[in-house]
Length: 195
Image 1: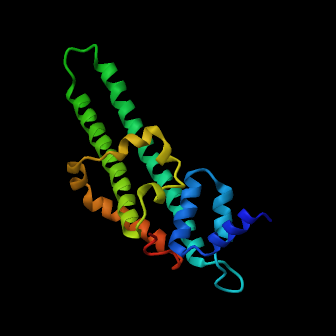
Image 2: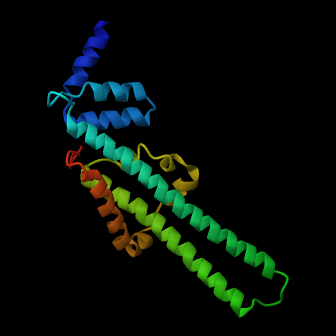
Image 3: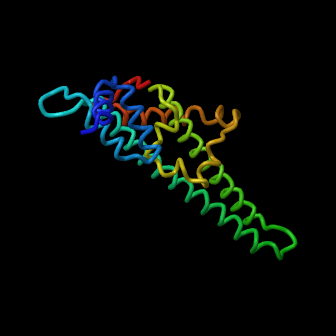
């Protein structure tokens, strides 16, 4: 083993739990699975059969939250895009008529309400993740390091939420944050304050 490798191993083994979790998340964000695995393996052994449960449980919780965030956000986006498509198809069909029928106007109204609900749900999910990130002392980027959606340009435009929308969705966002907090705490070892 080279001297550099020995020094790195010694540094890694002496990292406090919170710093270790942040270093693992940084390595994952940079695409360095090897470094992340090395940091996980070098976590202190706290019992005879496992490494530091706080580290593994916290990283596992972040993987779980990232996966669940992706499922929820893509489901909402597909519903939103479907409703948007339905409204556009209706507009094309009615384009040749001189005035829109009352039935058509009612249908369009329902589609627009559903679109707005979907956008509010997407914003609530994002604000909920931000709330959890604040609670545990991490950035949103670190909480969603395992999320494919966080890197998706089609999703990224939804992360810029104006203050009026934040106010309107605050109750729903709190519910999403509470659900994410349950996931975060489910095995009892995730750190309450990482950094």
